[in-house]
Image 1 (cartoon, one colour):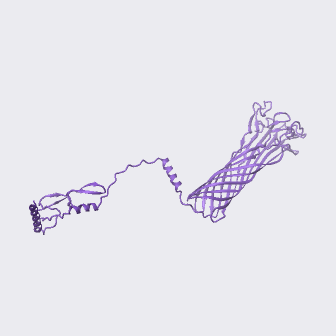
Image 2 (cartoon, helix red, strand yellow):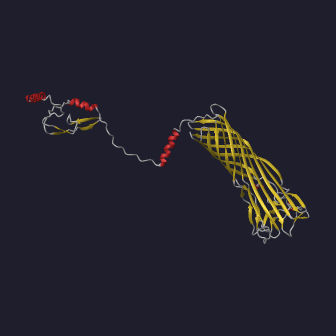
Image 3 (tube, rainbow, N blue to C red):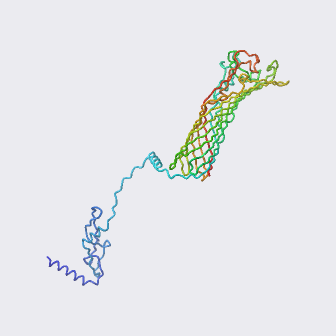
Length: 489
């Protein structure tokens, strides 16, 4: 066996020397006219490196044509050990099996994850470089409507025993005994502040606002012949029953009634603020200061009566053709007190949100002013008398008192950055006031007709004196809305 192997090796060496002039060819066996396919390597993966099985040599092309004239040189064979080392030295990159695509989260989960990420890392704190700021803009408010005690204007049938009186079968209330003046009040708000230290921890701020409601005017008028019936109902204390003062009566009197209301609300504050906490984007302020608030109501009833031909209006033994009277009920409430509160804010590079609460404790000065007058006109001249119908000498005057006042306020502000020094603001707040005296709630519809200049029995006072005055409190609230600009520097 060894002799045969040596013979084969000797034969191969001889062939190599005989064909040294031929070009080298990768195939070891130079058969002339065959196509040899290139053997393909086979790999079997065991761990991170492949184990190679198959030929240790291969052609660079799929197949090669061999002719009779082309000398063939034997391929250079690598030892098996070196081939395995070369294969192990070049690891093959494995392709991981495709993973299953996770289901897309629903909108609630995505929103919750976004909020959680933002809460963990809301961002870097924003620099606070401003020294002072000024805010101003439009302010609108819905004030609590005023309450009126009892009906003020009625109509009915002249066939009733007491036409237009409360309780008569055909009497209908035209105005009063309800809440009025619920229009939008418009005005302005203005605030200014300044930091007092370089660290922006202490600041002082002043805020004022004023809103006024448009006049609520209600008019009633006859057609020139006294139609329809217009009356002013009262409870006659001297008669002990319901009665009326006629404004228009078919065929006798033709008149006009105008009822107007107006409300104003204003406030002024001076507060010191302390930056109690400053986080990444969140901060909170404590507030301590002084607050003033003012609520004013004006209510007026004006009446004019014309006597139709054949009719006169008597007064103090004289006859007149025209009568003009007015009743006014005005009230002013002023609050003075200390105030404390707080604010929590979030700052973003292009917007900010702030929630605030305030509580003011102090005193409320209530003031009610009642006035009335009547004028009788004729071609011969005019005569005046104190008192109208509901404002008579028994209750005309100015009344004041002080009560304990509580004034809480809750709200929020949203600011949108316009430039580095200008911000657009929008805000809302609810303001409460525990005790206020308003004009409509301090009307007394009980009247002693002997005190009323327009009554036939004027000057003859019998029975209880009325109307009288007594303070009537009510709880007050308002909703305010603000739109403005803040300039800081």
